[in-house]
Length: 510
Image (tube, rainbow, N blue to C red):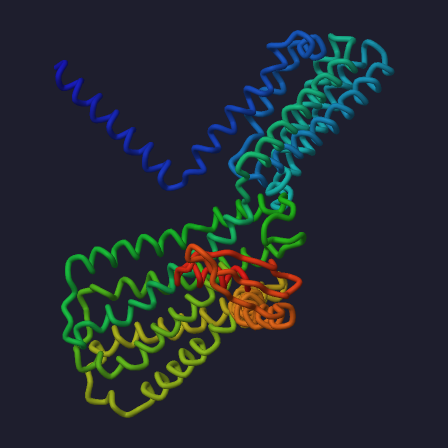
């Protein structure tokens, strides 16, 4: 019994460890976010640890800690939205509660509780009903809750406590401190932008569909092409189905990120007033296309497959529609990711539309009279779905083009032209330096060379002008006397009568 419990605990611990590693591996920002939250709470807790700070706020400092815990979110937009909601709601709720308390005190001691109760009833009821408005709920739901909480706290507790102003002041101060601390820490330390995540999510969803359509044609017509699918390929197609389902289930993520992105200010490549709502429109069109992809996936390994000779008739237009639609979506995804105009997607879209026209011509031809309807129906359904995919792809392309126009995406051709100029500017000095360097070296070296060549001539000329006459006459003890009348030379030099010494004496005289 003990061994079985031990094995169970060991298995659970191993499972939790693997899950923890997987979560950290999928998104390392989660680790950074956890550290940021711990740091922010520790920073606000200093109001309890230092007496000068604690004396100013007292036990109300706990509201700052609670505010950080509640407000701090994963992205900057979420944290900023909650912080602004909580701060404004606390200020408005505190002022409204204080006003209601003052008005109720003017009605007398007997009517004051009834007036306060009526104020709380009306305020809480109206504010709660406002939360049902979709746009209000999306952006200000948390703020309305905090408003109700603050208003009721000031009104109800103020009936027994005369220090209403001081209580409201301390609560507002601590909440503002907690909200500002959470926002500042979230902004300074490795900020996570919801707008960037929304941008990447839409681009990834389009890329997921493009990969599916690029491989669907070959996968579906494998039997006509005499290709037998392997077990690994079947598993890959099952994983592609999961990817398509993730695209279909991405609506909540896109809506949430859109709401948070509206709170964020300019950052990175996203300027002020970026058309975030256009991503929601593109996401909806992508999900419509994903519905067709899911339906097409069900035909890959279904039992009622069309005969090979029937599939062969649909092979060319269906393969072209599938491949060109996938290529078009791939270019659209890359255009969104790099924030370029989707000019490269147009040729693929035109080819896909031409394939649809070829399919219509094929369907109107008189080649189906001798075929069984049950044999034609499966592949005809696939062809019709692929034609719908082309229409969906065209709608997505128009939406991406609208996004590029609103967000002022740059033309990819302009970037391609600018890049060589930049490289030329960087390389040119090196080229010029390479060309000029020999000239410089030549200029520096030439005088030395010329000097080397000319120097003997100059010295010879000087010597000729100044040497005068040189006389040699023997002297005793094998010594030769050299006499010269040159003003620059010694008048008399004595050297031994030895040929090497004589040569050296001549050089000395010169």
